[in-house]
Amino acid sequence: MKKFITTLLVAAAALAVTLIAAPMTANAEAEMAVVYAQIPDSWEAPHVWAWNNDGDHAFSNWPGGAMQEDPNNPGWYFVHIPASMEWVIISADVGDDREQTGDLIIDGLPVWITITGTEAGEVTWTHDQETDGDLPVYVAMAVVFAQIPAEWDAPHVWSWNNDGGHAFNDWPGGAMQEDPNNPGWFYVHIPETMEWVIISADVGDDRDQTGDLIIGGLPVWITITGTEAGEVTWTHDKQTEGDLPPSPGTPPPLLQLISLIVIPSTSTHKSLPDGLIPESGLGMKVMVMVMFSLVGRARNFLPPVVIGLSWNCRIGLTILS
Image (tube, rainbow, N blue to C red):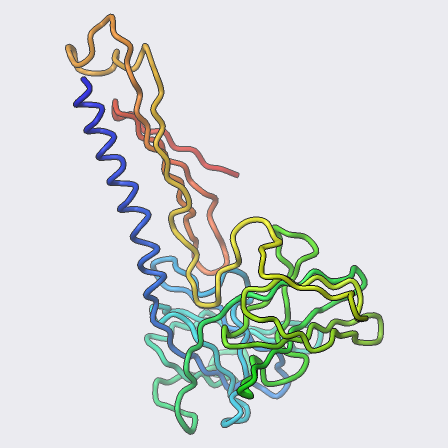
């Protein structure tokens, strides 16, 4: 009896190690490649949304990764995404609206996409290099969080380092998005090599900004109550709840939770083969609980699924809303 339970526990533990290790290894070794887009003059703040047929996404939230203009190729914008991505959508602000292409199956990276409109025939792409010079090199990213005054709108981060490198080409820099799990906190990813930041935002018809902040490493949490001395503080100690938002290009993890549950039971043995557990004995129910976050196509995500497998081979399935 003890040998049987031990065998089940070892098998379940092995299953847990296998399931947990696989997605972590895949993310850590993700190869990055570049997507270029030449967009209409009326398009502003272009972004890329990307996914593949396995359900992996390059970014966690629509509209995806912000593209930056290539200073050596005016009119061309780029962003890095995992080389495993197969589909992209390019979107951008046009006045008060947001325009986007259809779903483009790019069939490999790098890719150069030319957009003159959003109708059929107005979007073309090629794997032949359309830009001059070397392709931009991918740089690992880290997060900047900022807690801003209630009257501040549309916060942005401007960032640079002592070598003259900049995270963004044009002021006011990268748009921050609010963390849905931490109301009042906004974040953006910048290259890990950045050393200085300025946080700015709209306040009525004006734009307020902090001074030059030497952040001394990333990630960083900046608290802003005003723009005067002493009203801006920052720390590397985590100030937000939950996991940090994944860096651009990190697919959402497939496996979220796996646990082992061993439950005393006086009824489990009734469904097992005769003689496996004595009729008068106290049975043990061993259950492996696995929670998956199943990623749907494009922007839609399915709810998490919990699968329970007990030692008497009955399977339970629960959808969490």
